[in-house]
Image (cartoon, rainbow, N blue to C red; front, side, top):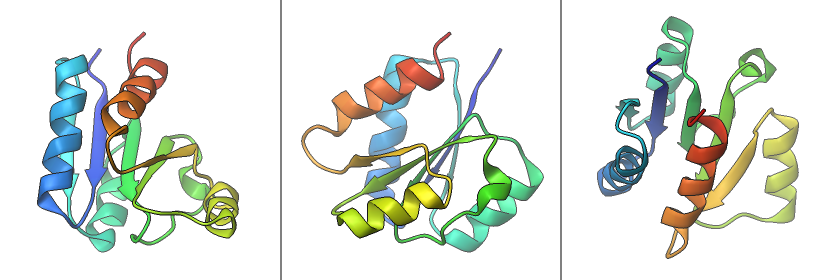
Length: 114
């Protein structure tokens, strides 16, 4: 069964990097991309995704999306922002940087590979 992953970031290089890492681990996933929060919400209203990876500068998603795995991909995050994301329904977060491949690998193994 093909799993659907939505990658949201306003930086094209980051979207493509995340997509390449995921495809390298599991070629059976179907990747979808967007660069803005408005399209993110529209896409989620039309389609069910198994995993959503989004930059934290996009609009916070509400609990109506609690049936998906929602991981924020962030540059920096304060303790207050972590609490806000968790309260909004985030499953977790990954920090951008040198460890992103390792952390994405853990997320893919946990949420996509059966």
